[in-house]
Length: 141
Image (cartoon, rainbow, N blue to C red):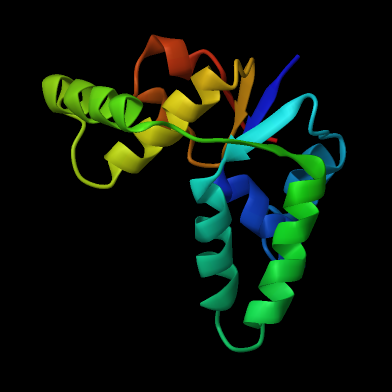
């Protein structure tokens, strides 16, 4: 079984008082580089989330980098090449996926490229609207 992690699952593992902290951490701790992946872009998203939280929970840049190192130890990273980006964006255009949903579509394509059987996300509806090939893989932790 192969797993793909969305930012909505990864960021909460580093935020103790987040409503999804425990469930997200539980599935993350079962991950290994051999069986689990996320998009390379997710590194930037997690860094952004952790360093812009309200003051009492906000991570410093150095702390966020320590957290990203933890992701690097547990997960493999998937990237898309330029032709894959074009393909996803063209498909979005043709199917009416617009706005920020294009980012979910890119992550969905990364999950397919990683051959993920399960896509862990808390943004279930956003991913399910990307079509049946992705929708059948979507799960919450």
